[in-house]
Length: 187
Image (tube, rainbow, N blue to C red; front, side, top):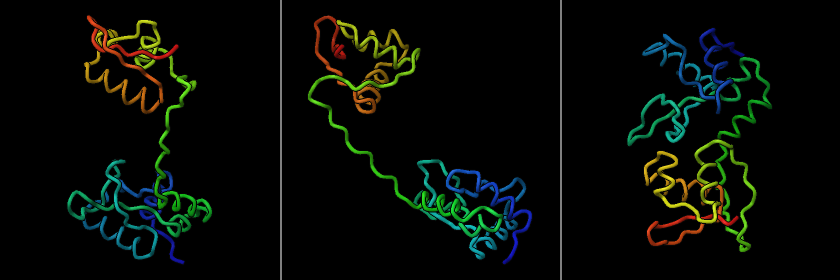
């Protein structure tokens, strides 16, 4: 079996420590034709593999394939074995990369009207908004804006996105004359 050079070992050992075994960025100073030559040999030996870059996770691109798509480099099981990483660990990491994330099940609010207990970090603006919504009089967007120094659209987004969708809190909204829309959480 061929042993990797110092540069190839460095690329593989760094890849082993990164999420998904990403081989990029390459070591400093390894650019241009030298980088292409080293990477080409590693791909030929099966130590690296070109896969489609996940731009949503800001993965670095090795080369562009067009239409805003590109490829990145990941260390393979054979590459990790070449530097002495156990095959079981290498295969677990490789299979985790190839597995597609399962969509989260859609949570339906229960009919009881009570919220499940959720751990909220004290002292955050989100905790401050929840406390305001739990008051008997609730809170309007203008009151939330005054308390958090956020823009009105940010406050509405926090209510609909973070509180309702992510945390599943049963927030009720009603129009109150003189205050506008008032949001409340059941006590």
